Image (cartoon, rainbow, N blue to C red; front, side, top):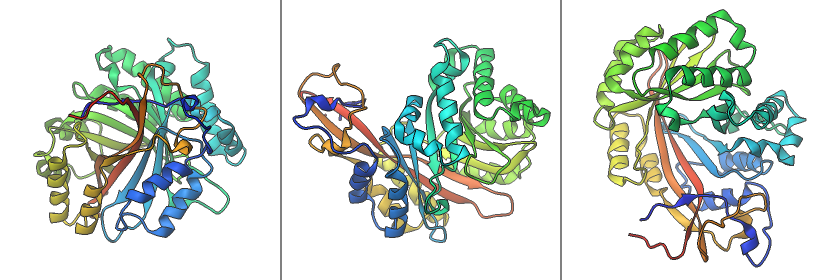
Length: 375
């Protein structure tokens, strides 16, 4: 299949205007493809309650716990920072300090000159909603992630550090004045292996937590344990080394999620990402490994492998609202799709608790000219 360009189509090319601005229409497409083992009617209704108050975002993620003992399906969106300037988000900002922080963060980003470290560093925001924790009348994201631009791998280390600190200062300004927090962040930055990059910084806006989430990509598996030892991570590195040995056949690198506050938390996330997201054999082998190690049920494995694909939504006008960007760069006529793929799997280590696994499945708006052929 030829590569498609992610974009937001211009509805003026359609004969009738779109009929919705919110995420509901995308959720209805998702409902058609979410098998029962992944989501109950109750969980889906909780997600839809959240989505009905949010304007469109180009990328939707569903987070599924893979153990039978941990039900539920959480909901994430990824979007450019200017998304927060829309009236729906400003209305939400009147309901909670978390939303006020989101609009302030994105407003600061928009107000920065293009050359500013913070403007260059943050390319998008991720909002993660723990749907089981939403109240009847209050929609609050559990974590706000500032996503750092991974393409900047060739810049000097000091420029990377400058961007990280600028983003931290905007996302959690009180913490950058706390000596212990500053020490741990500095230690993480100086201990990063070659090509390792902080790619997201998360503020636990809607969770009772003292921590900031630091997500690090592209750490070679042999470098993980020395890195954890260098930053004084308090968990059991022997247990983590045994896990890394098991997942080594799937990838030579791994992404890490760390919790950082006055101390570094003992929880550790190990993210497995396949750059070839439609490599069905790779995903089959990974989920087989998870099932064999009692980290995933056979039913959820089968459901996840059914998810990848795409649906042609060219004539579904509710999918393409007015605020999305034009498609003048594409030759007419244009086909519009929602592409479904597995984004990544995360293994979560917590001291004195069994290892758990989560899968993150995605729904992205994409487009291509009809002249493009599938290979």
